[in-house]
Length: 274
Ligand SMILES: Cc1cc2nc3c(=O)[nH]c(=O)nc-3n(C[C@H](O)[C@H](O)[C@H](O)COP(=O)(O)OP(=O)(O)OC[C@H]3O[C@@H](n4cnc5c(N)ncnc54)[C@H](O)[C@@H]3O)c2cc1C
View 1: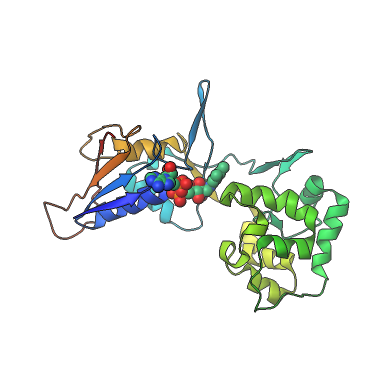
View 2: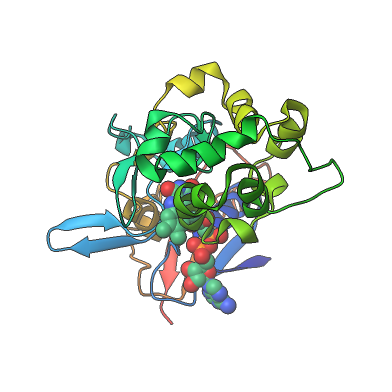
C-alpha cells in the first residue's frame, strides 16, 4: 500500500520520512508549489543564501538533533553566534531581553527591556509584580490578553508581537497562552505575577544564557533540509532532484527485504515530474 502525504513542508516531510522508515509502505508527498520545504525557505541575495523562514531549531529536547543525525547531516550542525538574538524595531534595535518567554521578560525593569520599550512602558510592565491577579484557573486567555493586562500594550506590541509573528505567523491576541507556552499560565496563577512565572519557568541556568542561544542551525541554512529530502540523503545515492516536481516518492527500505522495521534504515528518495 502507498500512503499519500499532502504538503511538502517540514511536517509533511517528517511524517513521510517516518512512515517510509518504520513501515513497509511507500509514501508519496504531493506538494502544490515548485519546491519542498514550505516555511523552510532559502532565499538567494546575490552570492549569499539567507533563510527567509525558519533558520534554527530549539535544542531543549533531542528530537531534531536525532533527526539530523538520522539524515546524515550532523557535519552541518552549527551553533548560533554568541551575540544572541536581536530585535529590529522601527525606532531601535537591541538584544532580545534575557530570560524571556515569547518576548515576555522575567524582569520588566531590566536595562535591556528599558532600552527597547522605554522607561514609561517598563514601569507599566513592572506593575505586574504587585497588581492583584484577576485571572483564574477557569480562564483560557490569549497571550495578548494576559500580557496586555499584566504588562501593558506597549510591551505586548513591541516585545511579544514580533516574536509570535516570527514563530507562529500570528499576533499575540490570536494565540492561546496555554497552547503556545505550556505551564506558564498556571505558574502565573501560583506566582501571582507573569514576570515571576517567566523567571520560574526559564530557571536559573537558562536565565544566565543569552536569549535565542538554546538553538542550533544547519550551516547551509534551511536549503540543506530540502536538498536532502530531494535525493541526496538517499543511501542509494539516487541524487535525483525533486525540486520542481509536484510528487516525491519515498520508498520504504523494508518493503521488499524484511518485515521488521529498522530504526537505522533510511528511506530511498526518488521523484516524479508533474
Ligand atoms: C519567518 C518565519 C521564521 C520562522 N523561524 C523559525 C525558527 O527559527 N525555528 C522554528 O522552529 N520555527 C520557525 N518558524 C516556524 C516554522 O518554519 C514552521 O512552523 C514550519 O516550517 C511549518 O511547517 P509545516 O510543514 O507545518 O507548514 P509549511 O511550511 O507551511 O508547509 C506546508 C506545505 O504544504 C503545501 N500545501 C499547502 N496546501 C497544499 C495542497 N492542498 N496540496 C499540496 N500541497 C499543499 C505548501 O505549499 C507548503 O509547502 C518560522 C516561521 C516563519 C514564517
